[in-house]
Length: 145
Ligand code: 5GP
Figure 1 (spheres, protein in one colour):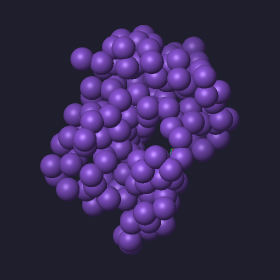
Figure 2 (cartoon, protein in one colour; figure 1 turned 180 degrees about the vertical axis):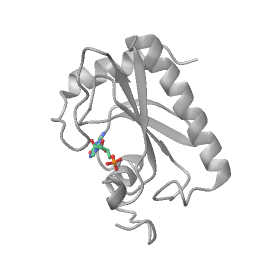
Figure 3 (spheres, protein in one colour; figure 1 turned 90 degrees about the horizontal axis):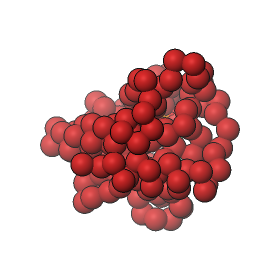
Figure 4 (tube, helix red, strand yellow; figure 1 turned 90 degrees about the vertical axis):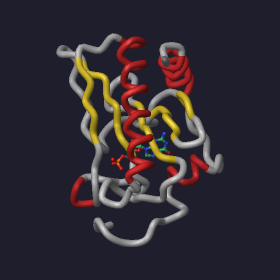
């Protein structure tokens, strides 16, 4: 997938947004959804997507939707920090296949980091246990401002 082209309404995050496949939600409102990455690169890896935009990548998103999305990323990252007490946070966002993107609905990764824990590689993490993801999501949601 290049940086340019049509939005695929059957991409995995579109299906999650329509409720056609399950996800472990942290929080949502009319504009955004934050949910647990099912292949977490570290404990507490959260994805944040726009519910209103069909932008595939950062180049395409409407400014108003981007403003709401980045505010949601900050709100979620603050809750992750309070809940899990990481020593750092890596925010990642990939654009186009050559840029490392694998799901073509714009999203931000929030990845908690600890100095003594190796972060798993992008696209190389095993699937997480659903109950553990639910427990993490609940801890993070409890810390939302
Ligand atoms: P990208 O490579 O596009 O930046 O990131 C896509 C992310 O979506 C990856 O971190 C991957 O683990 C995650 N992912 C892929 N399929 C699913 C899924 O079915 N559910 C959830 N929650 N995450 C997924």
